[in-house]
Length: 491
Ligand code: HEM
Image (cartoon, rainbow, N blue to C red):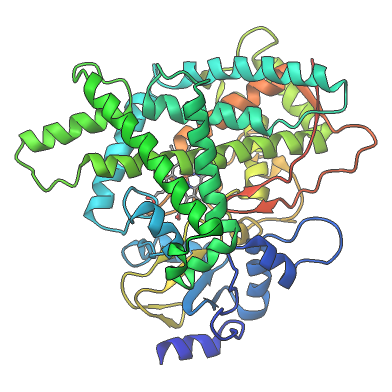
């Protein structure tokens, strides 16, 4: 009755069996149902859901298959749920296609509870020690940037001025950072086996969100089908498992507890420390480590790489803003010294430009699905326990009650009259509340270093005569720019 009541008061009428978005996670399905038939990419799902809020209000429900899903729109509603009622809104649903891969372990898709909390705390403190400290990842990121710049220049020369697709180079560099953090600096980044593991992870995700395998969410038994993408998915899973298990075994053999090399070593140390302390049910196990490693790769690579790719595309599309960013970098850093984290705070316009790109593009537009762990009265509705909740971060960043002219690209909205950077509460690309992105500090550091380094060295320009690349993006797990090419001129 509660479902009925919720539903009849708010939200579009569902179709039998498939609900409103039978293929909700399938972008092509959204394209067919909501996108224009004309050229160009479909509207992203979060933008579609933002439009529905104009009809049904900021809290409404849809059905995905037979699952009730409540969509939260606008800053006030999202904040009220995730920050003011964190104990109710911080659980994660069991999404069959994803649970098959994650077994509901790790951090990203783990249920809200003590096991998730212990692991999140452990990872955050390890990230602080290894990643964000003075001797942490900055040198590793900067070294990677030197390689990126050489590679981009080589590709530009090869292209003869036609333009370069920066995506593969940027993705490589970003996964190398996570790789150093999780699997150790000694890792050979050109390792073919490792490269193929990254490809497998990409393929696994692609299958889960963008193929008929998405139907596993509605009919879980499809997973066992002995053909097509279903069979491929099981093979991908086996290959990733074999790779990571081998890797963990190798770490165990070479572990020096006094000299941990990376997060994997720290975790293995933690297992022993807890065992020695008699905490036999600590939940820290080699099996769990496997899922943590997978999570960090999945959560930390595409998100950051796509954010960098969006900044490059916006800079090329708005040359006057690019000029201002470069003038600021030239004034503060000059042409010779490599920009470093110590420059953060001295480059407000550059930071504002990065934030404005993040606001408009919101690379994780619907956050990661949440679930209510209790029935709650919320904004006049009864939301039953076990309801999937989508915080629509995209709608927060386009909320006209928070942002003037929300669709326009204007970095100065993050600056006061004196040009000082403003912290805006309603800017939440990393989410908000207990499930807020665990890698936000690392991601901000990578974004700042990458953008300042690249813009110090290069001017990005759209190829002459070519059509302007669309700024709507492609919706998968993250919102990625549609593939584009830019001309890269050394400054
Ligand atoms: C979760 C954004 C980079 C690790 C999330 C969420 C968002 C987000 C929106 C979901 C919050 C929610 O469910 O309410 C981003 C963006 C990034 C980025 C925009 C880059 C610009 C990273 C990096 C890492 C990471 C580099 C790893 C080091 C995680 C983890 C979670 C998460 C582990 C799950 C947290 C939990 O469920 O407790 N991220 N992220 N992210 N992110 Fe990120």
